[in-house]
Image (tube, rainbow, N blue to C red; front, side, top):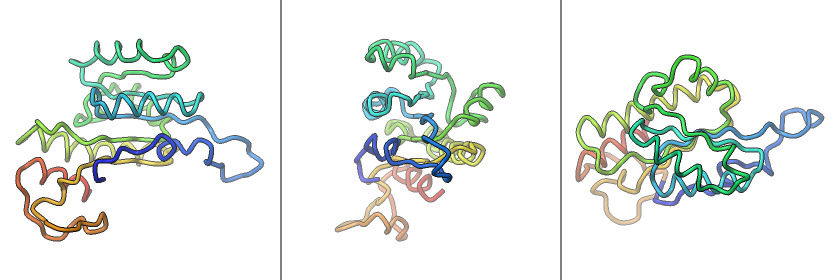
Length: 193
């Protein structure tokens, strides 16, 4: 929550995940959905996840206007990772993430991990609310539908502390604080979800 991105091991847990039945064999490959492209955190995390587990697949939920940038990003990945990274055009704040019914159904059937990175700091007003609140709720709903989901990671910001001063612990999320701006407030409201 406080500015640190999750490590690939924390997200995939690839070497530590076991199935409920010890005789069932190896856990299925990770199928990760990342939001937040083209942020540096998103790009670095995608590359690290693919590097850490050669069986993992990463889907980047990308706005249509960033499709070419996402394709270029995948093209720059090491050869062993390129075929396992898939940009999908959509919108976190649209129903079914802006995907067609068949695309959405395929995604939720395979999904094991969702990593939702903090929204764009430049988004204000309705755009900020749309991404932070509706987008986060849509990903929570997607997580409920994804029967294979192992984890949902919501990366936020220290700004959810608003105008509070001094030491602020993670478990002290809601202490009746006021906020400097709408971005801080909508990030806070998204975490409360």
